[in-house]
Length: 269
Image (cartoon, rainbow, N blue to C red; front, top):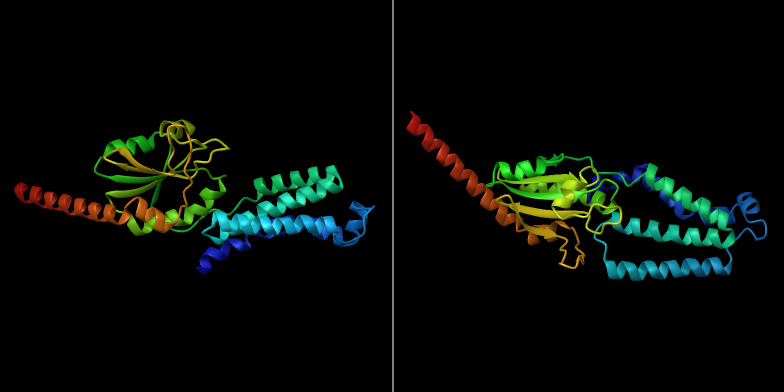
């Protein structure tokens, strides 16, 4: 694990969310909070509370084994999600008003302190509106790998460093990397058959365009609209989109273009 990938831990998102995950335990066991909020209970965790927390740990273990997260961010996000669900149930079981207040608190936390976005180097072109279609038509010899994403989508945020790393490794004048925000340009996303709604399970979507036309995409979507889950790792993307072969082909195109330019220059002289 690179040290640079741990920098987000210093952000408000990773400082405040653990507090939200432990909030019930803190308020239930420390005075004067427990006396104010739980006047009919003792200032300690009850057996029912411990049973629910034990169930949470079991669910996390099963989910982790089945889902197999590939980054520490995904593991932490899963822990945050299930811990908040457990906190909501614990608060609501004690007093529904407390559960509602906690739910609002988590919603505000999600909006104000989202998962920190990637801010490192990349070789990615960000498209605005019809600029994507213009780029695909401008030079069919250029192969494009385009990510359709949304800034509010946690999987997109976690995938950003991986896509940036791939762009730095494989970018070429004939093999380009691009991104399009489906939230800002839903019509363009719909044109390329990407669902950009808030409940979409297609984000992020990677589409490979060769000769100006789509040749591959992940995740796959069948005719019935069923989405095949896909794990966006460097290894999977390099393999499924044949990036090494595409880079070699791009370099060969570059050499041929350079040779033609030299011949044309010689003829002109």
